Amino acid sequence: MKKITLLLFLVGTLSFAQQTVSLVSINGEALNDFKQANNATLRVGTSYDFVIDFTGQATTANNLIVKMLVGVSFADTANVSSVPITTADGQLTVTLTPTELVAPSILQIRTTTTTVFTNSGENIFDYSWKVEAALSTEDIAKQAFSFYPNPVKTEINLNTTKQFESFKIIDITGKVIKKGAFSKVINIEDLQKGVYFLGLDNNYQKFIKN
Image 1 (spheres, one colour):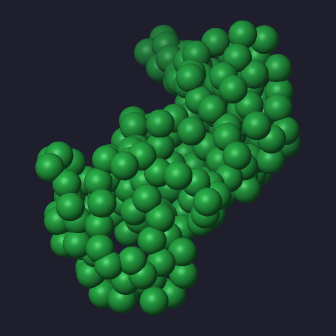
Image 2: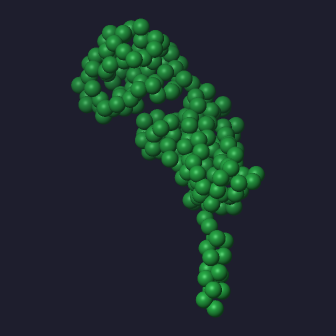
């Protein structure tokens, strides 16, 4: 009798093994950090690496999917990417490169075989996302700070009376090249020559590295 009870318990446990997906990071940043730093905005033509943990998944005809849905209607957009799942438990990187503008949007992370279509451990909905045009080198930044020299070879010197929390340097594709705690002198000697954007919190200005 004890053997039968134990067998039934094990069968029940296996039958109800939960499928889960969880977002680890976007381009190396936690979800909330990425949303705050980028104003919950993805840009057309920029690639974003979504690192996702998963458990209890089918390994046949099952993909891990990252997509943008139209707000309210939940309709699919062209902004979607997927990779095949080959192990029941693990971690994968799904790279999404948006191709069309969408606002407002919903970020969805799920698997092909999920049967749950509400926000849950196996079907993630994250709201208030936008997909906007790529950054232009002609964009006019908000004048929350100034700096010199520009062009620059080794160090950027900042002029500002505001105490920012952090800085970020991105290239013209939107890729984060360097980031750190706020400082009025930022060393960029290790950057390759080219056009970049210096961001203090969410305020960006263009500079040229010589």
